[in-house]
Length: 434
Image (cartoon, rainbow, N blue to C red):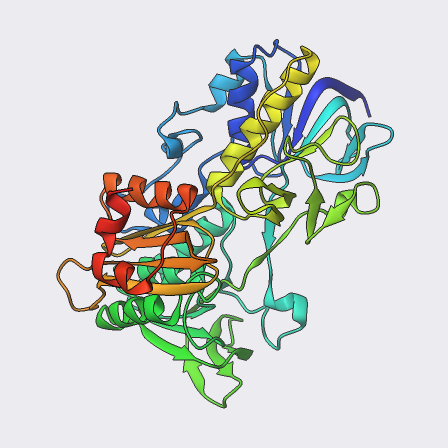
């Protein structure tokens, strides 16, 4: 097979790849220097749309509407944009071998790609129940959500099983957002998760109680403290029942599994230093191998604010880490320096009429404030996390853009607090005066 050679190659075609391409153009990349190799069949797009507007019965999002970089208010990069800029977009191409010492990538079809500088932006893959040998987990209509193909399968299932029953396995991000999307489509929804409350990696029991109550009021049934241990299918091989560990059996026309993801680092095992499940990088996303960078979900990087090293799975970090790596690559070539990556962790979600944002670190003592009654017509509440006498994290449901900016500032500044009662009493006004 003929080999192709590029100065820069991005492996992976998700959010990070699109934002890196835009930054390369800002930095003056020349036509023919950059290639993006993606196993997906479409140009980079804003992945969060898949669990939200892509599934809505009205006002539905479809490509090319949510190609990057619209998610951050930027220009929409259509496939033609890459062509105009002389960026080679190599789609539907899976890399099966990476030899970092030889600076060579090999595709499933045997194509060879050489590079001078590589950016690893492979992202994550979903954890599947078939990985654990769960009985019947290969039945039809047991679905996952990561890529646009997955979302298309889910859309077809929603249409094919009108007013049917869905079981959502998992109570995290995907579980909550998909439960809402399916309910909006008039599907009967039951969520199943083993933890004592939803979204336990971020939510306190107090925060979770609001969302569980709100979802219940919307008709979502919640089964906690147990897991799916098997599935029964009908004569067509389609799922019809979910067997739970506690002995219960739930009817289901559709099952959506959202039990987490794992970073796609297998190609690079033994070739780069790893830590905390990801590829270890410095504050410029450079790995232990010169000329190899890693961004987004796969990178374990120094989190300056907390003097820690972490791996962050979120679209905001996917965008910003990609931009930082490209700036570092170009400044290095020009003999210049740039500031280290100084990231403030940020997570958000939207479901039903709800919208929350979180900034900082959810460690220490948590204080709940505001109106967190699930039956309120316009609930607005939040939480502060306090560690070593300082506010280190803030969560807010129903905030205005200005209020969300205020809580971000608090998480960044980390103001001292002597008395937790002050935060309970002052609530959001404490953040707005910082």
